[in-house]
Amino acid sequence: MSDAYIQSAGFLLELSPDWLILRASENTHGFLGEYHQRMVGEPLARFTLAQSLHDLRNSLARQRSSIGVARAYRVRLIDEPRYFDIAFQSSDSVILLEGLPSREDDYGEWLGSVSRLIDGLAGGTREAMLEGAARRMRALTGFDRVKLTIDDDVVVSSRGRLPELVVSGDLPAIVANSADGPLALFPREGDDDVASALLRSPSLKQLEELRTAGVASTLCVPVTHHGELVGHFLCDNRLARPPSFEQHAAAELFAQMVGLLLPE
Image (cartoon, rainbow, N blue to C red; front, side, top):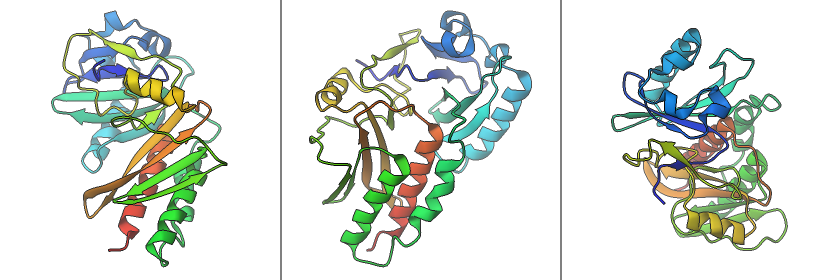
């Protein structure tokens, strides 16, 4: 299976630099009310509210210069009382736009809790800091287990004794439910430009490995130190969890702060 597959929890559009739809995930009708075959080759503006798209483009253009993935929350894309959280990034000459239904119950909570979790993390030994970071990432995300790998150091914080999770290759940033199958993009011919998408689907082998280990959801966040990748957090959960771009952004921010605090 190529990388041009996504998970069913959200939708993905590949856009040209002038926001023409090049490809669309085969589940867009369930989110935007229009079939993917009809969207390809058309401007995104044809299928979204004009003011919402204008605001979204301006917001994402401002963010794009400073971070890899820009996000916008509670965006009303279509003329229905439905709101979406959007993740946006550029990959070569293609713009990737991913959407998830907004979650009203915990909006703003994750990002607001990062500073409290960072407070007091530094100042002890390296071992104590890594153990504290793993525990606090688990508190932030609510996942059953967090495995923090930094260089040769591995620290695990878990809720009870859980079977070891071994997965081949790199998992996507977010896995919502390993029981769900992958969804293709239309047209199916084309480059695998969605490799960096937050909601790209795991490979079939990875999905089987997750199911075998009894893992339904995962969250994977890199840790960098002085601009270099030094490790990552891997969070996993027995039950499926609704994906959230805000939760992932908060986990990214926490991981960035951990990287800055790492002792030399």
